[in-house]
Length: 373
Image 1 (cartoon, helix red, strand yellow):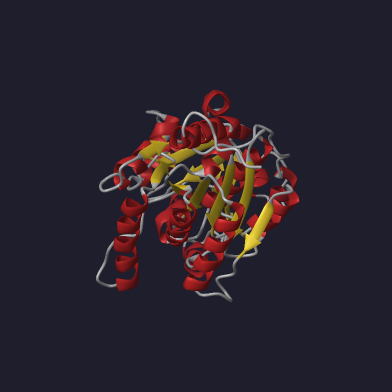
Image 2 (image 1 turned 120 degrees about the vertical axis):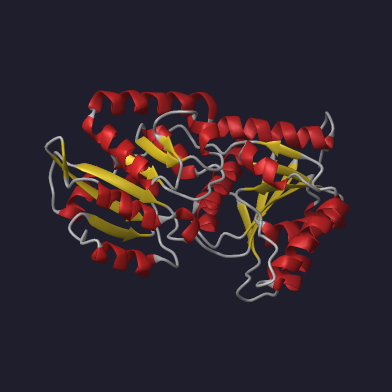
């Protein structure tokens, strides 16, 4: 079976991490050949090359949409994949036309909510209409990373399969010493963390207010916080930290290459978002046995269930109280961490994700994959 994955590769965030891990594991499976088309030559492309995967970069910085589409169609006709699998919406359009041109099945993954139609942004609105029409014409098949996302994107789409994200089971060494050095502190200390894009939907401002609601010392131990990630709200968040007089308790680390090591070094990861699909940072925390307090939104309740640590996002006081309770009670925190790790091992390894993805591919192609000489 031959697969081409098409994605932007401009960031190293949740959707990009999920895509890279999926492609890397697919490439290890016997009888599966994988190559990637990416629109940016960034960290995701580098990680894939290091894994020995063929990466074709059709740079959106130098090529227009039409030129990228033509180049992808030419590659597809020459390589003759069985499946073209796309991630994000511009890439869905490129992949759909390429699949139609070479007779491949088109699979598209929804990592988050689709772009909304809006008069204020006619390009997005027209793109959304074109995407829906093309999806139906080509007969695209959808994967959603959570059941909540599947409900949101079903509508005109005929086929939405829920396949959660996954991660390799190996836990990277936690960067605990580096975190403490950033504050000039030594143990004991409790470190909260926000790990994600500094954008409105992720609500880093809510994270700062949650920290502000917590005392600086809990159970005799200092409480500090880190924000890992970058985005359009970086300056606004920095100003909020100053406004709340939290400079001594907060470090903004920016974008890092080893965010999973920081996740593993936290005492509590806070996910205060207004919406999430199936966040990779949550899986990283589960794998590392890091306690989590999260918004009851998107696919998060599907992963964590009905527990005191999953709170309505608008109830910031309840979220702060959940964090305080975990920091005060080490036994309760340890029990929650064990539950998270067990759930990850049973349900969210990358091997499970790839098993489900390949089963979906084979279902679309028939009981026997097309052989290539």
